Length: 141
Image (tube, rainbow, N blue to C red):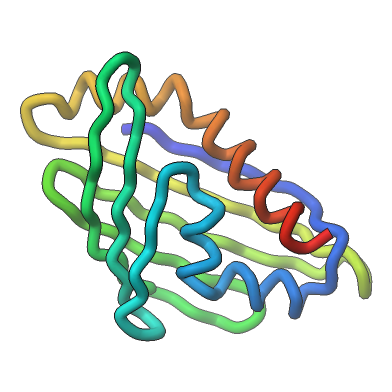
């Protein structure tokens, strides 16, 4: 089961970082290949296109915010056919103009191709985390 853990600093006040990262539409825009349709404040539908080696696959997931503690923490779970994901974001103010972001994600592909998909994701998860970090920073710095 692929897992990612990333801590980085954003040169922006915590409230600005929270405004971006507590909005599922905006978070989704920083996840490579993700299209988000927001249903309400806590539920969204995600369409995630993933290149898995020489094969491409699109996953449709229903995402639900499971924890929301403004302006420091959010957590979510997403379920779809042959895939489950869970993640969290924790923010800490370092100064008036810097915020630490701690991003965690766990992905579990199931079904006939689950083991193969998990192996591919496990090899690419560092790239996905870095793309997420670059996107967040580009929107705030």
